[in-house]
Length: 240
Image (cartoon, rainbow, N blue to C red):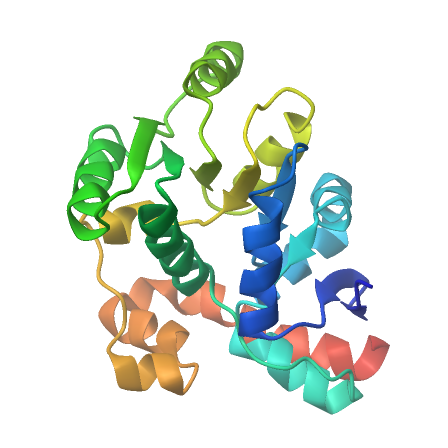
C-alpha cells in the first residue's frame, strides 16, 4: 500500500531508496505509463502558487524527496521521510538496470546537441542499454505533437524529461494519455551532467546534502534562488 505525507500540501512518498527502486522496476513491467517526479523545496514552493504543477505532482505514481530541505521539514513535523532520494542518483540506477536488462531510453531536453552527446556517453557507460532516441528541449508549443509522435515511434521503456521544473512535470502530466512508454520521469539538469556540460558536486557535498551549497559556490548568481530554503522552512513551521 502506498504511503505518502504532505509537506505544504504537496504529496511526497514515504519510501526508502531500495523500496523506490523495487517499485521502479515494477513500473517497467506494467502496461500503463507511470510518472515519477523528484521535487525539492523550490518545486514544493512553486506548487503553492501553481495549481497545474500541484495537480501534476498529485497525479504522479511516485514522488521522491530530492532536497535536504524536505528531510529537515519532515523532522520538524515528525513526518518520517526516510532519506533523500535524488533524481540523478535514481536515473543512474535506472540506466544501469536498463543496461543489464537490455531496456531502452529516450532523452528529451537540454540545449541542441547536448542530449545526443549524453546518449552517446550513456551508451558507452552502460553496456547493453538501448538508446531509443533523443530530442533537445528548445521547442515551440506547435512542435509538441511531433515530439510526442517521435517518442512514440521509438517506444522507449523509459522517457527521461529534462526540461527543468516546473515545465517537465507539467509537460509529462499534460501528455500522459498520449505517451507510449512504461515510465516517464522528470530529471531536470541531468542531461547536462551526462552530456558533460555540468559536473556534480564532490561526494562529500552529496553525502552531506549540500549540493545546493556547492552550486552556490560555483555559481554565486544563484543566491536569489537559494533563499527559497529558509523561506520554505519558515512556512513549514508556520503552516505545517
